[in-house]
Image (tube, rainbow, N blue to C red; front, side, top):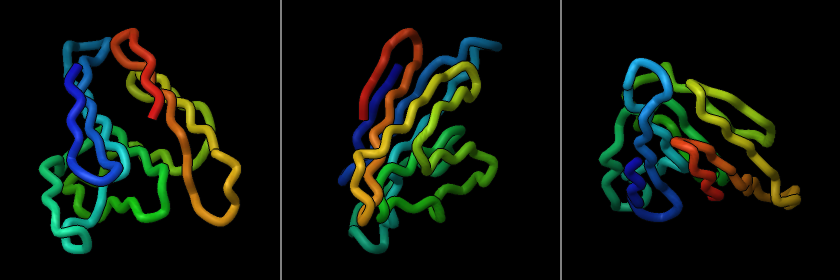
Length: 107
């Protein structure tokens, strides 16, 4: 597993899939590089998690990713993700529990 911070609240997680030895890329809170003067080196993702209001997916080249932008329980490509709302009704702030390669990560 490889976890990379890209600036602001944006991270990517590259994880081995449980089937066919493929790699899965999970992108968390991607941003618009034009607004932040930062580069977003990840331009493809299998799963995109949007936990904050200012996250944005328009700079991701492939459009066939699975998008999670609300609370709930999800299983995507043998990865388990739970989104939990922090209770703030004015501003979106979802906390994600990601289970990949037998490790639970809270973000």
